[in-house]
Image (cartoon, rainbow, N blue to C red):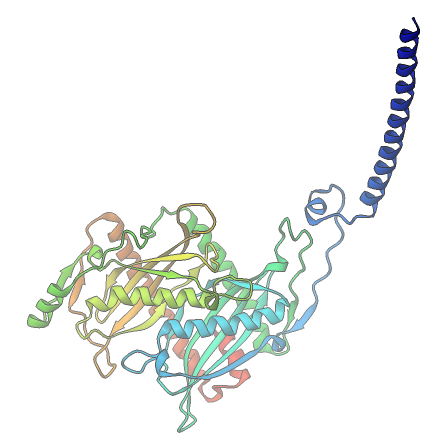
Length: 440
């Protein structure tokens, strides 16, 4: 009995000890819960919580006003041999990369933040830039919208011996301000400044830029209803190289127009986006992509030229459907859509692939249409000796649309030449830039 009593006493003592430990644990748990509640009250909500939180949002800040002249950018540089072809004419793609850079600087001044190229309107090269000439680029924001803006850029060539300046080309580009886009990580976007015109020419520029935006939106809406017309994406593992040696030999021999199919003009190119091809955010420069587009178009067009010399005359409007970044692989597929008297139109489709993302497959980037002119060794146009013969309905539709684009280009070129002649005496001045923007 004594042993039994002793065991009962031990159990009672143990129960008392466990109860005390449990009470201490509950007390510590209560203190931790209190500290956690205090931390929750003092912690600032992250952007995702702010985005999903119900209730009235703070009133957005009113857009600030900015004079149009404050967005003007002037760039000058020498056209070096590495920028030119064998005839000493600057590659059109290189000019477009300079245009994109100038427009990007102007748009970043207005946005006060990061911007990306969204689209480029049709660009017509009035005259080529020659080697060793001075290249002058003038850019200015024409109009700002909710999160995008239109930038106009004029490119001039100056003869270093005579000082004479001539207009090379003029372009309209659309840029998007990243901090003005409403996204989960940016619940309170900052509006772009409202541009203020100080001259009648600038007022005309503002109104006409708004009208061009309406035309772009209407054109994009109309294009959404069409079927896919892009060239099929082809990666480097499936590439083939067209061979037009036989046709070129026969064409040189009897100077007859040899018929070829669009499939005979297919060409493919692969580019790897390196850090030097991108902006500080790692997004590929739009102008760099356009320079590669011109190279791809040249590969298809030059094989149809008897002399082997092709010069870029125009690039139709381009819209970037998806941005690319450092480390992406870009696949360019090009084919001739139409052959004219001394020029050809080439369609270029660009697809991208992200090998480091773990997601297989290519994504669509853009479609572009480039017009190149066949020239003699002295740079004068020469007739094409090959003609294009479509083999299916899709190729016939592309050819029909190519002829329609040609008529539109000729009309725009006439208007462009008229505005150039009216302002020829003011070439190189900011006043000329305003007047040219207004007439366009």
